[in-house]
Image (tube, rainbow, N blue to C red; front, side, top):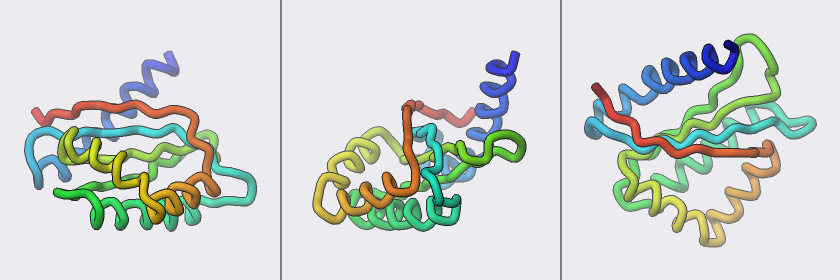
Length: 130
């Protein structure tokens, strides 16, 4: 039951988060969700700082850009677990983001993200506005 409730809540949150982004770009988006845990002594402010650098880097280095990222935290429950929800306008931009992160500056930003959190899994979704 908890899994079903979690899935329904996640779907609702994704709809709310992704709808404005998709409305600005098109009727579809590629959404990557990372499940993460804060590392000892780190806070969501640390996550926001590192993730902000990632978003800025991606939008400056990926043709087409328009990449958005959201940190999702629990209102009730384990406050050390969180999600990154990264929204790309399409699969082409998502693929380009994976190439962009390979340069020296991208690797430094990736290292900074890894200093604040451990992300154990990710999923990639095609999201369509109805």
